[in-house]
Amino acid sequence: MAIVRLRPADLQHAIADGTLSLQFQPQVQIASGKLLGVEAFVRWPHPAYGLVGPGDIVPLLDQGDLHLDFDRWVLGELCAQVKRWGGEGVDIPVAAANVWAQTLRAAGAVDMVRDAVAQSGVDATRIEIECPKGSVRDLSLAEPVQRIRALGIRTCSEEFGDPAIADAASGFDTLKVGYPLARDLEALGSGAAEAVGAIVAAAKRVGARVVADSVETAEQEALLSGLGCEIVQGRLYGPEVAAEELKTLLAPHAE
Image (cartoon, rainbow, N blue to C red; front, side, top):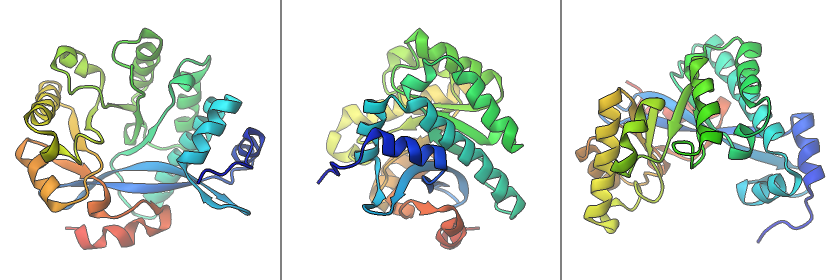
């Protein structure tokens, strides 16, 4: 049931106070079990309602037009956390976070991303922006995405299941096999396998990595591996966890 008492102003205060939190899901190399990245997810520890998730956060973002402030907090915290991990000897090659289309279209969006990296002192090549749908063809999104990439920050897209846009893959460092394609590959039939094949082929042409998302079973992982996917994330390797829990979660899969 949706939480109806929360208001956009409540979320705005949480952003300003830094009382949101990030949780992380590993991106794991199939062949070795090695950690090759993480994706960040936002949760809101609320004193009255407990841990508030995206189903209740997203409507508040839309109602309050809070996307830019929200993404500024997310990227700032992500960069700071990667820097902290480095100081603790935890090697996170790539740390990814989604950015809203409304943020990318806002004045100052590229400066915001640049400042988050610069203020943390993190290596820009370890940070990856998961781009919203439309970033391949919509110039209002594609232009800031390419300016962000010019800063040395990585970019990721889920839009390359369509061979018709494969030539644009050179604008991204990661191509993602998203939900439900990765999770329901067998049930979706030959068309789904062709779509995954198109993503893998596009990635190989431009030297991008492929990450299959929402993988829940070893059978799904095996099917994706057979189609050329080398990296997966999803509940097969555990749920999202807080930063301090990441080493414990990954221990069974370490080399």
